[in-house]
Amino acid sequence: MMKFVKINGVQVAYAEAGTGLPVVFVHGFPLSHRLWEAQLGELQDVGRMIALDLPGHGESESRTGAYLMEQVAGDVNALLDALEINTPVVLCGLSLGGYMLGQFCAHYGSRLAGLIFAATRASGDSPEAKLNRDRLVGIAQNAGVNALVETLLPKFMAPDTYQTRPELVEELRSIMQTASLDGAVGDLLGMKARPDTFDLIAQIRFPTLVIHGTEDQLIPLSEAQRLYETIPGSRLITIPGAGHLPNLEQPELFNQAVREFLGQL
Image (cartoon, rainbow, N blue to C red; front, side):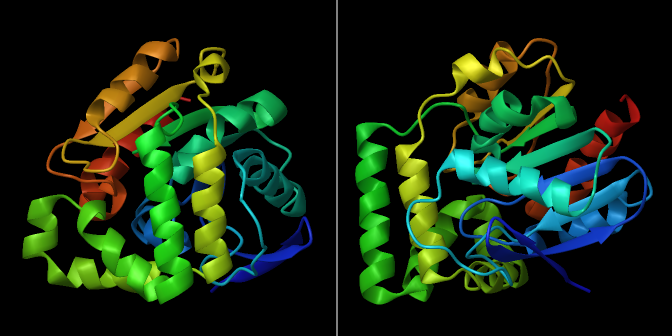
């Protein structure tokens, strides 16, 4: 059952399961808390698993304008306040959700017990990537969110997964279609505006896990290697055969890595 809280002027939806160490899962663009259902279901015995819908996604209200990474971090921090979580937490961010982790560390690092970077990177967009963000904004504004979803779908999964697991493709499609136009466009503009955060993540002194699929078509494995090399004492786990959503494509392997990481905290 979904729950709702008001944070920074927007009603935000979230789901949770389990008790103990709080672990907050932050989805990417243009997804929702449903991306994390396998984690909430299978990991609730090792902590309090929480997954939110960022504004403009899933069942949360929308905002207008660019959704900057500082705002994402501020919303996650406000969620912790609203849930009266005063003990250290683990944040797990995937793609866009991972882009904001450096900002969260810089502004709210005292709240952290650990970090999980999933299918993400610290580098900003290249000029070509910025142009592609603009192209995707145009698709969303001119043809709608569903057209944007169909453009993105083939790249979000490993090619083999996309070709052989139509039920998973349909599940992902249904998740992505819940994004509002404002939410999708705001994400794209915010991701386009984000700077490199290597200077921020180099200062991380929390236990850190980096997880990446070997078949990620959107963010190459080399970006995960750079995170691992930049964050002191971090650990890198690769998920064979997984694309940009390793927790959805290979939930058993993803959950095993997270479980082992949490067990060491």
